[in-house]
Length: 78
Image (cartoon, rainbow, N blue to C red):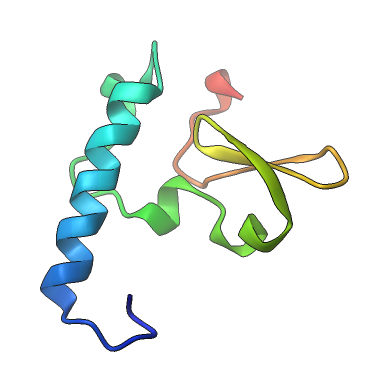
């Protein structure tokens, strides 16, 4: 959306909606640690999306089978 030049408010609204969904899906610890101001960039490893084969709670599984975690994901959940 940013690359398309969409207004910052549109990006923020989508970011908020995604973060709220992530909090519901990442159980049992999702609601305990996902900061209200967290961005998608901190929750998911966007640099690994091009090689992602599947998504897991705040991470992606790459084509080679390794997992890339978002910076915000607690070590106890990895």
